[in-house]
Image (cartoon, rainbow over all chains, first blue to last red; front, side, top):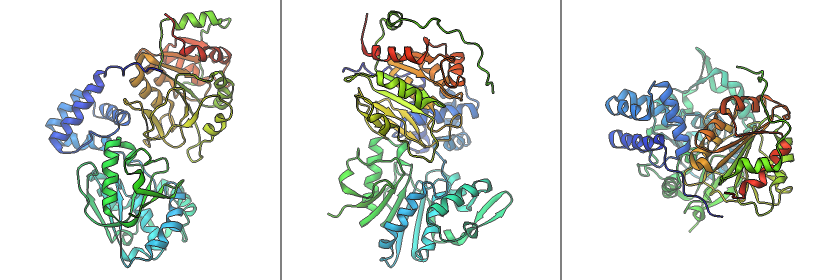
Length: 280
Length: 216
């Protein structure tokens, strides 16, 4: 069956491309290879909050006011995450990855696109319970400075603790989850010892290079926002960063089947989206 | 929030096949998107078998599902339909003639290059996947080539999606609220989008195979 040609771009689609290009040229944040539909929804949400009538108006403001860009950046990045999200993933990391990690005298773990830190603290807890945290250097990277700052602080909303406790238990947690945080001022402040060996750093998967050799990379629900070209770039970075037979964990609906790197990672746990760098 | 659907003017008696064909005259479609919530599984079980073997359009189905449970809908319908049935996966190319189901826990969108993308932005109308998200992104890609069908449900999701389909020149069909297990969702969409047709499920069943025949 023949498809009719794509419908011509709407005004909003044209404005979107101009905005994203302007953000790149002016602030060197590269969102050009993000998937369009979700990005558009989030920019339209920014229009409402920032009280702009059109994307062009938003673009003009962002061009001339760095504070407006900082505000837009909170929409362009996607800080939606939870601790021990998809408990089966963490359970599989415990059962299938940890035994290999235990064979290394020292470990480098990279949480790429760490957002506000939920996954960093979850993995730190897991590594702590497996006796690995002391010898692990963790890199938690993101492009959003506000998210990195929140991750460093380690304060989670108190009303989430019930869900997170449930997740933690399903994820194979061996202690009382409340041992890891102190409730104060409406927030749950996580034990700073968990992130003593974590380097929180500004790193863009779209424009920056590999910075360390790693044994395990966890990058969940980040590449779903990238088009295939950027997804390929990122898998290339991961392949380069991972040590011989290193481990990669992705989000529960992510796939590398459409990537040119599909053959260079082998599935370790298909449903939990754990992969291992293929031997050469 | 309003939850008492105002009385809805629907065609009565239900239109004949000839009337349905007349409504579609001069149209040419590239894709179909079907949304539903409460009562939606039963409605799809009744509706989807209308799709004949060799059907030429991709069909995107989206129902509200509990977020932590894996959707078995694709499996369920694979056994019942004469066309390929899949869960819509991230970055997968949309293949004409395939029935796709939105998976649980993530929003589903259609991209300009006619691939799917998923995202975990916050729920819309308490729903993830949300019907609005899939319909709005599909409308932006297919424009007048899109058919939107909204079925039974107890939620306002889908109303803006159907309005977007109409605004981009697409064709919209809402289940007659009097025929729906739960009238809220079709009622909301009728108020928000002035659909092309308001039909009982049995008539949508008759309409579905007509969507790929081109008439001038």
